[in-house]
Length: 146
Ligand code: HEC
Ligand code: HEC
Ligand code: HEC
Ligand code: HEC
Image (cartoon, rainbow, N blue to C red; front, side, top):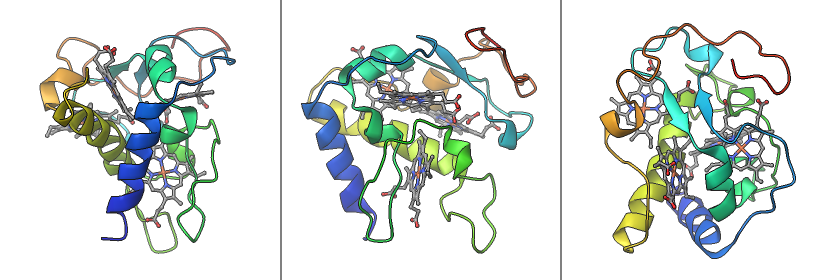
């Protein structure tokens, strides 16, 4: 279980620290990775700013070196490193799994400890009516919602 431990550590780091808010992202974003093409499920609405208040940036915006040390933050899209269907030589963790593992591991872990947490069921994240099956967002101008 080479990969179990880092996730646990990331979750602990998250629970124990607050993050600075010195950046200018939309407070709430709709995650819509272009590389996943037309989405099967409704798009996920993500309260980025609220999360950043309780979770350190590097917990999500990470970069693991060959010794599995977290050398983040990179502050770039997950899809810069995680592709939809990795071929040999690509990062082996597919984008969808990367997102699911990141989001759900934390939500589950915090729930288990009795903390306020986020959803773990499909429909609670992929909320119907919240932009189902939209094509990937075009590159929005800085500061504008796609
Ligand atoms: C904690 C929130 C969360 C939960 C719970 C969750 N997902 Fe997702 N899911 C995401 C995010 C975020 C993405 C990445 C979307 C992107 O990058 O565009 C994603 C991507 C996907 C995708 C690929 C994009 C698409 O719609 O074709 C599928 C399929 C999917 N999820 C199905 C599921 C299913 C089935 C479940 C329940 C077993 C589930 N998800 C639970 C957050 C969640
Ligand atoms: C709980 C996880 C999480 C935390 C904590 C978090 N982010 Fe994010 N952030 C995301 C996700 C998911 C996206 C959407 C990435 C994508 O579309 O691939 C994102 C997007 C961004 C983007 C836009 C990237 C782009 O190119 O469009 C920036 C910049 C960013 N975050 C900076 C930060 C900073 C700075 C912090 C800490 C103050 C932070 N984030 C905290 C998960 C997080
Ligand atoms: C700069 C490159 C880079 C970016 C950007 C990046 N990752 Fe990763 N990620 C990696 C590498 C490298 C690994 C390790 C892959 C391996 O197992 O060899 C990894 C692994 C993971 C894992 C598996 C961890 C485990 O212990 O099993 C998850 C989950 C993950 N990334 C989620 C995300 C999410 C969510 C984002 C965006 C917020 C993101 N990653 C952005 C490089 C990146
Ligand atoms: C390291 C921990 C952590 C990670 C990673 C994380 N979350 Fe959360 N999430 C939380 C906590 C804590 C709450 C409860 C916040 C509150 O209500 O005070 C939450 C709440 C939520 C909620 C409930 C509505 C809201 O925003 O208050 C949604 C939806 C959600 N998260 C989606 C996501 C998605 C999508 C991802 C992955 C891209 C993600 N979360 C990653 C900790 C995390």
